[in-house]
Image (cartoon, rainbow, N blue to C red):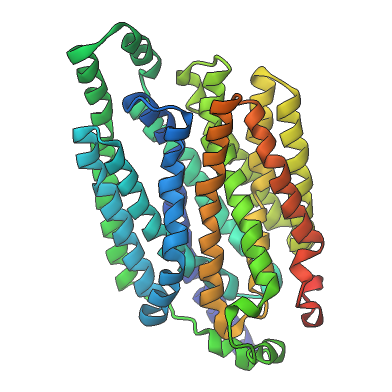
Length: 434
């Protein structure tokens, strides 16, 4: 009996240490990702952009997931999880460093290049870390583990816009008023000074990422081989007769679901500051709105940790999120002012358990195709590039309020996957129990 307890304790420790490291990586994901919520209004001011142009920030950052997701899978097959994570951190550091010349010359295209390189590095990190958390324990509690990672992500997401916003948007309203009265050299000097505010923060970010890359490379993070899963699970072994990852219909539909989900997640977090400004709320106040959205996500993650799978399944959580998203979206459209902003912030709560619920449903039974399946799911993050850009176009064509109609069909798609789409092609495998 003592030997069994010793083995169980050692197994728990062996799982906890990797999860702590992955938790640190998820913190980095959140910190780097949600900085864009502040960069959008900041660059719109510093580089004199319209709504559509400013949302190219999100496009440049997230489109790299589409470009790099499959190459990330190939890289991980060569390097394994640990070295791949370290390489991803180096990529993110390189992208952060590009912000220095971008700010020095106030060159918007260089900012976009830096964001693209950052996104490419995060694509590698996401491709490695999400399946790692999914595999590192029972599949029916995977959403709970990913929710824990989501808390790390969400805490960073709350801190990032608050910290960077306090530095680069500290006097944004005053600068905005001054720009209307200045022209020529004086206006250029003011804009150059505003652009230069990001140099020191991004130098600190670069140094931190390099140190973390070295730490991960030298850590004892264990490697996981998906072929071992096939040997231990006859149901998964039966599926390995398939010759391509594209033969898993539930995975492909999961990719489409995550595509629309990442779009609405970024809309909820990245547009709320500009939306507040559109409603006449000062930027000195609106710069904190993204943090409110992420607080909603944190609350949802805590609910997931407590309730999944004890009180509700991953699929039930997905249904609740989809219904909530539709209701909150309609609430934002039906109201105005601060109340409408509150409904947009509540979309963070609706979004919270979509990502952790879709991953295990979509990866179920992939066996040796898990890394490539993960690559496709990470590729779906490019929805955050396309859908917010469409929001920006609608905001210019109509207004920032009516543009939120875009989120309604997205949440309906998420609900369809929770009710039916996740089962297509896998009925015999018992995914419905999730």
